[in-house]
Amino acid sequence: MPPKPLDYESINENVKKAQYAVRGELYLRATELQKEGKKIIFTNVGNPHALGQKPLTFPRQVVALCQAPFLLDDPNVGLLFPADAIARAKQYLSITSGGLGAYSDSRGIPGVRKEVAEFIQRRDGYPSDPELIYLTDGASKAVMQTLNTIIKGPGDGIMVPVPQYPLYSATIALLGGTLVPYYLEETANWGLDTNELRKSISEARYKGLHVKAMVIINPGNPTGQCLSAENLREVLQFCYDENLVLLGDEVYQTNIYQDERPFISSKKVLMDIGPPLSKEVQLVSFHSVSKGYLGECGQRGGYFEMTNIPPETVDEIYKVASISLSPNVPAQIFMGLMVNPPKPGDISFDQFARESKGILESLRRRARIMTDGFNSCRNVVCNFTEGAMYSFPQVRLPPKALEAAKQAGKVADVFYCLKLLEATGISTVPGSGFGQKEGVFHLRTTILPAEEEMPAIMDSFKKFNDEFMEQYEDHRGYSRL
Image: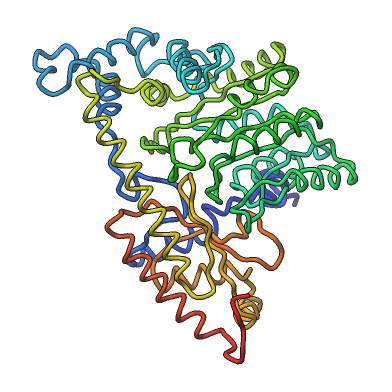
């Protein structure tokens, strides 16, 4: 009897190829242990509210009023909500066609897209066109939509930084394209080297691939580095020379933990360069309400802005967006509130500034605690988290540990991370889920656990790591090098 259409052997092979380590084997084991009653610290995913970050008051007040507009008619509404939150809720309701329960334009509410364009113009100092900004269900959906437009088949290559966020490898596999890796240099604080870019594209073309796009993640995930303006200029020149569209994943642009390398957008650097690059390099930039001080992952709000994309292609992207009818409307309101927060002089400004500043200052301290903690451990080295939400330490595993992993049928860093999970309840993601150089092993953890819990978590990690190394090291002279 032939297999049924949804029997495993019948389903799309691209679905089987797509891997997503952030919710992979480690995460599944962690959820099993949690069901058994073990306390699990889920540091595997950048999910701030799940690890105790409090939602900002003002955005939630505005969205609450939009979700329950009858509250606006209550004579006591002014006792519960500040006047500026009431005014913003009324404004958003006035630009929706039927409130939050109605579909919006497939590109997103025009008034919110205008707020995003004004935010980009303030940030970069260059005009932004709301017609070239689409609101989406999180930045992930924006990335998938864009890659879906670019990839025609297995001969199409997409350059992706390695280590990379597995959204890219999974989506490229799902769409039937080919990932073209370019390696970041760990010893240069995960720097991006244009020689590596040229080597990567040459090898891909030698294999017969048509390389069409290059992805940058800035600040980096999982690596946490911030790209300098000089680095971005080199990348844009490379894209111009090689006729590539640049996909700028900039969702962590507010998450910066040092002053030497502030976030600079790809679009600003492109416009600063001027013609011919500023008129010709195709750029798609992504942002999200899930990160920064908002951390509203569950709301699924994002946008992408298109630069130098032909009108006919924009129309096709609109057609694809229309198939889903509308992005999540409450998330669009969150996006408007993220890009257009309370201003000095507004009733809610002081509270908003205090809450957002408190979150970012705490994250800055946590980035330092975690980096220092990892670097104090035996056989562990870690670059400082300049931005984003992650630490990506390298764990130098002894030969006996490599052999034990092989005997267990596990990749070495998966073996280490599973042992860490069982011993401490700390759920991480092995570096192999992001890609890494042969024979080098990492793990990724978020810097999101509560600040007061961080020292105990790092102590727990250090104790586990000491015991692991004691068990597997050959004391006749295995060294950190």
